[in-house]
Amino acid sequence: MSLTSMMRSAGLALLCLAAISCKKDADPQTSGTGNVNFEFEHRVGTQALQMNTQTYTNANGDDFKVTGFKYYVSNVTLVKTDGSKTKIPESYLLIDAADAASRLQKLEKIPAGDYTSVEFVIGVDEPRNFAGAQTGALDPSKGMFWTWNTGYIFLKFEGTSSKSTQPSNQLFFHVGGAKEPANAVRSVSLALPVALRVRTDTEPDMHFIVDIAALFKGKTNISFASISGFHGGANGILVADNYVNGLFKVDHIHN
Image (tube, rainbow, N blue to C red; front, side, top):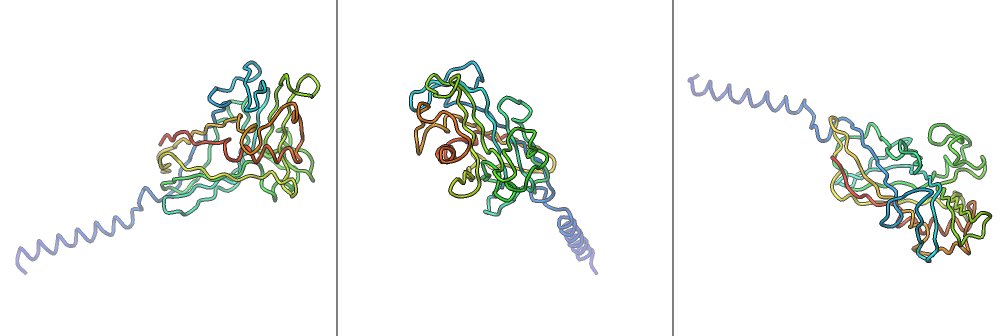
């Protein structure tokens, strides 16, 4: 064999070894798992939420203050650029506007890849809603559980308004119920402004704007003189039908 042939053979061997090595080393963009942080920022329209002190105005022109705001985000699903979906198991998140720690939620062991949208339920799905008292975010001590047969409060808004007919001008909107005719479970799908890049060596953030004003406008503009306090039922459906299309927005992504 000539020297030139030997060199060609050696070169081919090196190429083959490189190819085998590349096959063994998985693509870092599609292998392994990573973590993602969900960050929730609360506003009323374009104004930052200031609980207890700031006076706001709803779409009906009624004044109000916010004294409490809590809600569940559950059954989180991330959708890749190719349309395939990754469901995050046991993703039951309880966010409390008064608790800074709860406004940053970490989702772990998400398959690496590029994701272009997010889907989730506002509230608690029917099977878990009626599974009785549970632990973690679903622990009844969190103040979001009615009883074993009525289930969880999905969203709790509390405040005051001069238009309220309740004692001390209180407002309390406790949305819940997972069975017809009062099924307040609502699902949302949100496109991301840029792809969420999940990798093993990074921890991206998805920043949500949560607009409390969405509770009171949309399909039905709410008058506090007419609706100022309820625990589920038909009024809860009115409010759920309002906020499903305006409560959440993905503002930006930090990859």
